[in-house]
Length: 242
Image 1 (tube, one colour):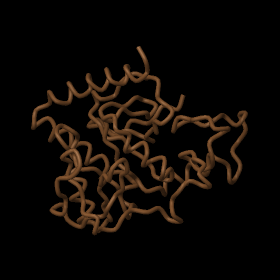
Image 2 (image 1 turned 180 degrees about the vertical axis):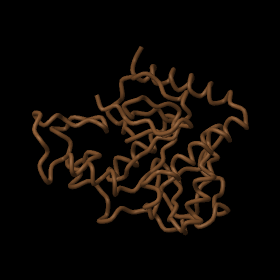
Image 3 (image 1 turned 90 degrees about the horizontal axis):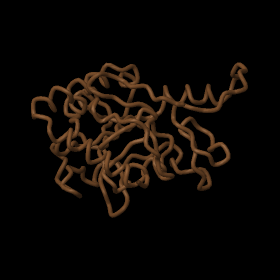
Image 4 (image 1 turned 45 degrees about the horizontal axis):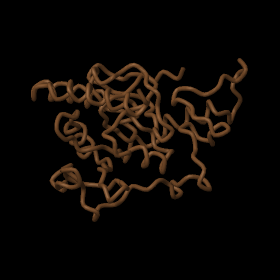
């Protein structure tokens, strides 16, 4: 079985589980996920947040969005345009209207999210999630990074850069059909989030899922972008960088 066939089978299994959830189960699990986000240290300091509008049986972010808006945070939702996707700010959920794939989308009249300094890759080169370019073009899992020969980290090291990134980066909450413990995800086959995250590697992606959407590892494809952590109804699942 090819890597793509394996992903397709996992996607089907995950969606069968999700589609079997009752309305009450979805509501309870979703509120637990939202409470974990709201109670996190980074949320209290965040001035902006990129979220998604749930469809069908996805975990809903209603409580989170309501809280963020009440606190005056800038909240952005995705809008699809052909093969691309961008995030636009809303000030009230009533602004969301049915768009591509029947997903509620924001109007383009809202401010589009842009990273400070333009937010594009440096000279077309992909940067790693912790800052700095990929090591010789090799991909790393988000919690990884090579051991520094057992030596203590020095000021300006990748470890310190990564720590600063974790504390200060803008969060983007990412839906999906399935996730694995090292951060890679299976979406719905269109690749919108992978392309968006490759455009803005300074974003800190957080996977949002139910506990049963976490699966054993599969072989990721070159274009797959991992999340930095996963939040389920049971709390935060740290990424395994091994």
